[in-house]
Image (cartoon, rainbow, N blue to C red):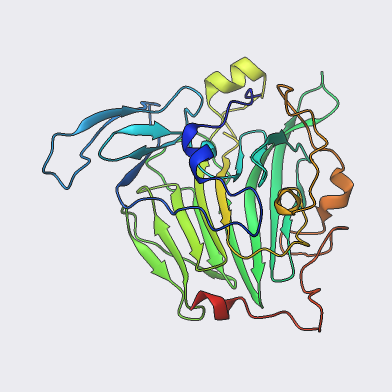
Length: 321
């Protein structure tokens, strides 16, 4: 299990600790995402200034071997999981809206409410492996089911045997129709039904940025469990399953103060963090409160979706135009 690391300086600069705070800045235009190649090489030559300047050698930190963000022209690198105040990486390590790290282990092959608000609901599907020496599963987030208004957006990592980063293992669908984004950095899909909803490639394979203007901004990378991580942490990957999962970064722009869910509650103004933030591994319990019956169901005990005073769900898409 990865050891919780200190939040990077960039996170401190952009984090928005409460819902009512101004949205943190978007990613600057000059950035790249490094993903490991077929042989796990994390060093890549990057041209950071429209080809007018010499390229620079950027390397992902050992804390984020699967992917990192490179800022140009400085060539400084950041783990994606240090980039936002609402993130999930690895055996899910979240950074809450209050800026504190915590783990939520959940349970393999189940769905959990991550964010639930009047107009937005996000569930995560967990995959995992059981270590017979432990009382819990090792777990990772395999997919997200996102609901807003009467729409459903799916993003997930396809089950993968032997990992090859040159092969795209990302699956996307909107209202049950597959989303096809060309395999080139910067390629973009825009919804014809929902103004402001877009998917942009951050890498030729396995990396996207999903945005709904004024509502959310999600960075997602499909990553495997490396043989080295499996050996160190006894995850038990096999040749049949590399346990491909999502590393995620979230930004939210219009949550209410009634928001709930594993991550969502940390954005409330009345949220009190009762975890030991100084511990190597502060763990949020209470999993039964967040269990959903499937990837799109808003039936967890803390669900808020559709419960706005006055009846019908307000159309968040109106704010996206």
